Image (tube, rainbow, N blue to C red; front, side, top):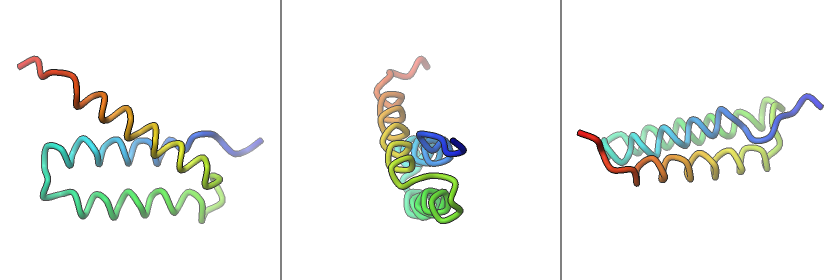
Length: 74
């Protein structure tokens, strides 16, 4: 099959947005729009099913939240 599960592009976009928004709240709106556009483009271009994108978003968010829970070493 030519489709992959989950959507790596969406996973990375959501993960980056989650971590960046935690550190730079002023960027949240712009990054959220970019993330939604990336996620939608995966389906529109026929590269992923909607479930691939949803799972990529869920995994990206979960990983990012886990990263944010790790105490800083500095």
